Length: 159
Ligand code: FES
Image 1 (cartoon, helix red, strand yellow):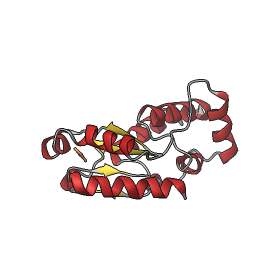
Image 2 (cartoon, rainbow, N blue to C red):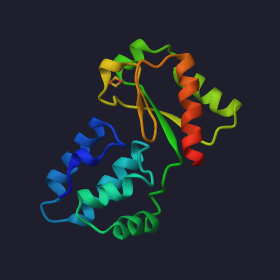
Image 3 (cartoon, helix red, strand yellow):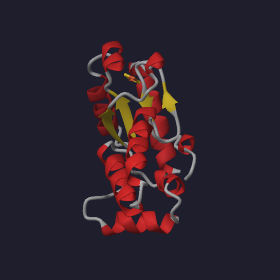
Image 4 (tube, rainbow, N blue to C red):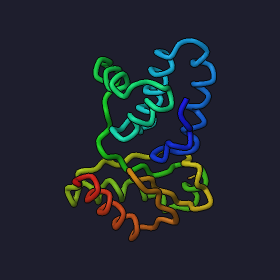
């Protein structure tokens, strides 16, 4: 089994959920574990190209098996580059209530190639409000820094 700390692209809370799945699924059914982990990642908007090697490592499977599972399941599809805005209780308390809609508006107005979605607590509450990009997590986000980080994420998505 791979090290769970290799999952730098996804939140601590999501990692805990994955650990829960692995604790019962790895008792004998790696196909079910893979399916459950992929479904969870999709549910949380975190099923991206970048997590495929990490999932393969965690389940000690070849990457091809993970790709095949995604391709063969009508329930699964990879996310586009998604910026996740934490909607956990502390972030919701600290953030201007319009942060998520402002981000969506900014993406639309500037024709950015990323999508924005709210997510559960990212496990970085001390930095609230928190936004998670593909390679980086941003803390203490305000309206100005939100626009800057969205432009940076869009640039990263196009590289
Ligand atoms: S509530 Fe946002 S990181 Fe925890």
